[in-house]
Length: 157
Image 1 (cartoon, helix red, strand yellow):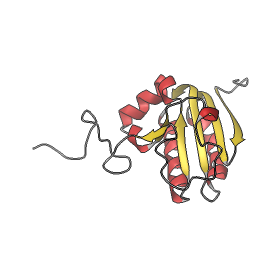
Image 2 (tube, one colour; image 1 turned 30 degrees about the vertical axis):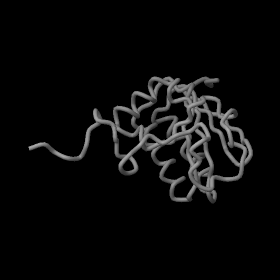
Image 3 (cartoon, helix red, strand yellow; image 1 turned 90 degrees about the vertical axis):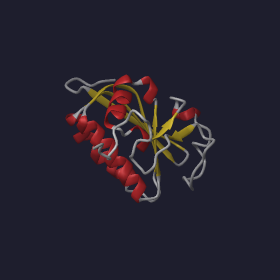
């Protein structure tokens, strides 16, 4: 569903109190510029509950990653919830999240179909739900990788 002249597309639907945004194509500076305004609207609500489905993303660059991080920060500031769905099905997104060390910073939905996530249509996010098909990679602090092969901020003399 890529429109002529654009290398990306997005579509959204609402399931209960959760907004599901499906991203597809190339999430680069053009896409990030166009999508940020809409994501800001969604994340401006009190306690937003958002699923970004990235299964169909074929390319993502630093501007796309910045858009994801901005969205996460805005959701956190409003005591909401952001989940990324389909990361395992999008090699470009998974690769960039791993390379940047940002994989632990996001809740990942293991089931790529947001409509199939248990509890998705439930009330707005009240707190941790360990049994809903999503998980946050273990971290020492938000955004800090806990994996042994990831870079750390301590230097070796």
